[in-house]
Image (cartoon, rainbow, N blue to C red; front, side):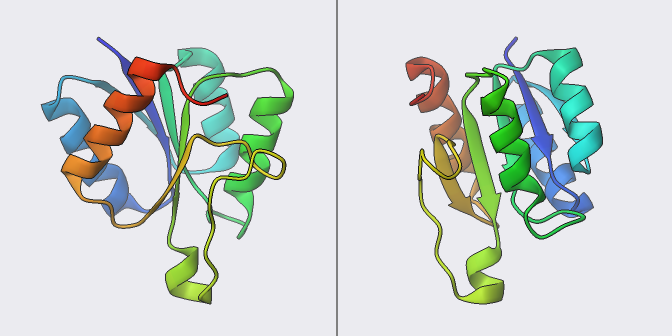
Length: 127
């Protein structure tokens, strides 16, 4: 069973994504902040990660991804964001700033999330 880690401080997002992933046959692990997320990723060695942009700090997700990539972690990452709805700013894939495989707006439809996950797992991510 493929293992997916979600790092997001929103309990509703945690619960809904957990249900979607487990119903699709994935093993789910969740963390609610950057520190516990980093520990979980190190311990669990997931097949894919889903990371929120804004947690305790507005840029926690960005720094988390930068740290993971600087450590040589190649695992596919989907970054979830509600930043554009809060700030009006749009984010997209940018390997120089934050090397993620995909950005998605919250909330994301379950079918779209599963399609993204399947595609990244099949292709091994874009990194």
